Length: 216
Image 1 (cartoon, rainbow, N blue to C red):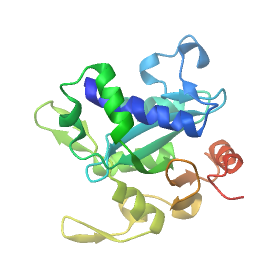
Image 2 (tube, one colour; image 1 turned 90 degrees about the vertical axis):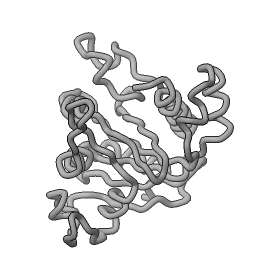
Image 3 (cartoon, one colour; image 1 turned 180 degrees about the horizontal axis):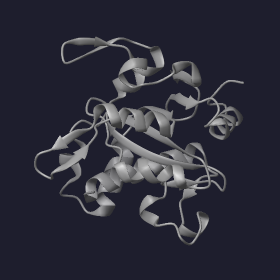
Image 4 (cartoon, one colour; image 1 turned 180 degrees about the vertical axis):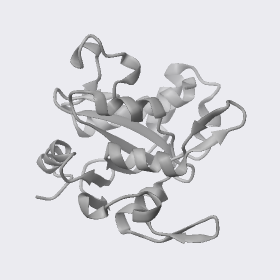
């Protein structure tokens, strides 16, 4: 990951820690001495882990396969938080700046428009359906776009390769198993949406109810 992407990710993490002050950057000791820092989620509050990923609203963001494969092996539950910002051309605008300059610019100009708490299982299903082979790097990658999440939440039909698809079939999901909420003005900085498994993510759902993100 490049320096600019790291700065954008750090800015989103800082915003999340403003909304949820009990979270802090993951430390190796939080998850056991045998855990590699590389495969730990970005944030932790002593009970839950959050993997924060931010991308431009029209382009999306990229989950990493090694995280998808390793997060389920951790002892504490982990959820993804995908944030979509409105700073078009953010990479070019801050590329030539110092680390301090990037942080200051992003703090002033990068506003998150909407964010979504998303189950690990959903991210895994999206990866399986949307991953593509990179010709340059000879590896697979997945661009997760906001419309994918909206389609799942609202059970919208969409087109892929000139055929009409339903989320349950295309992503191999049972939507009745998930709590699905579109982003609402339910918190401080921006609205949050939710796609969480009712049973597997019950700790995350309980936390969000306590915080007022999900109405009890």
